[in-house]
Length: 128
Image 1 (cartoon, rainbow, N blue to C red):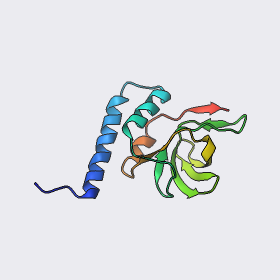
Image 2: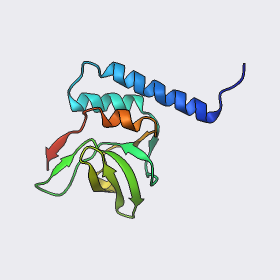
Image 3: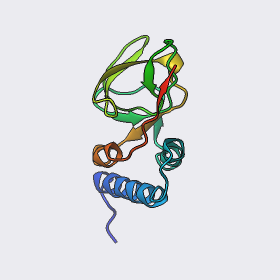
């Protein structure tokens, strides 16, 4: 039996992750519970993101009296000494994330998964 190419394996794995996630969250509406399922299924993680890639993670803003997204879904645009910048799909605009405020690993979201995750309501907006 011929082996699948790496690209085909990755695409198949991504499709499977999304299918599993959609099944698990079918009757869940709480953003915390949905984020827990995402972190359980999306096991590819990085500590430092690469510009052009997509990630989701846990975040806790240090700036007082601001509204922020505790479960960002971002397209990283640049990496800096202090952290990184990216387009937060829940906000629909660029945001900055400092290393010290990131509470988890960065969970990798593949190109063919981003549209599905964008359509899942797991943003958690809180005041700091």
